[in-house]
Length: 390
Image 1 (tube, one colour):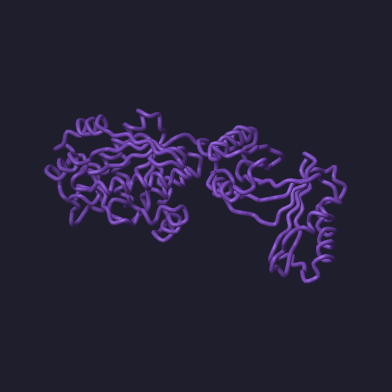
Image 2 (tube, rainbow, N blue to C red):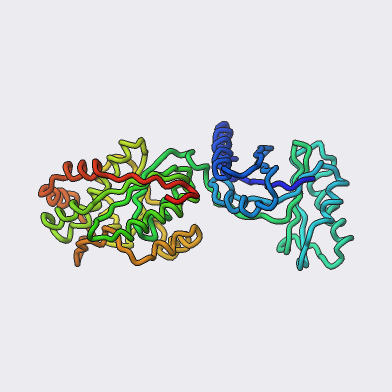
């Protein structure tokens, strides 16, 4: 008998003939997340088995694998030879604590095991009732579920605790994209959600020093570090936006300032994508949240790029976004009182239904190509290493 961690994956079952490639990527990501730990990782019939780890580090290991996209649950389990006698013996070693009710759930993947899943449920339920006379069976809302899995490797796995993980698809299985990372609540959540769908991310941050502070930049570095716990290593492109904003302020209609600013940001983002082999732009826009996030505004900003623009929080309200930010640990950093460049030269009445024609007219007073080129050529690159200080 030995202690193991059963790792359960979800959507990978839907991948058909490609499942092996997704699984290989998932195992690679787990191994990377647990770099520095001693362990063994094996796959058996719909489960990953993490074993040969230092038991005193189990909580740390569980906390790390919870943040690996592609896994939906981790179960601390006992592994032993799959015989009825062994199952009867080991189930009596379980600690039921203050539980009053229980149920048994069995999965007999190895059909060589003589007893059916239903038969094993009933038999082991009887064994438990005989030993723990204060317990009662509740099939619908039990205090504890005793899980037994019989696998084709000839082993049985016994557990009564299931710890939720992030779910989604393995990081890297959907390509790479560029996240527009501000200092707000929404964009870190957007990056997290796209990584959950398998997208590796780089990030770009626009700052307007001296109008914005050094602390505002540090805040964004901290946010990138926090989401890297889920999204992996992040290459952060830091773009000075000061001159561009000054030119917009001098030459464009005040009500169109944010629209023009967003269009130039999108052009810079697309240029960075092409230089770094990234396939999409990601933003934290939520429909109707502010003037630059109306349907018309998004249409006008989309018009200057040819790459797809992913907006994973588009249909979420602010409370839903905040809930995710709190869960992934970015909320407290996001609400620190350091402003980003979007608040510089903020017009009193920004247009909420801009048109492409009017935006192009305003841009005719700017040398847009030169401004974009200069901004990209002067970028600062900072590498955020997951689990390490930047």
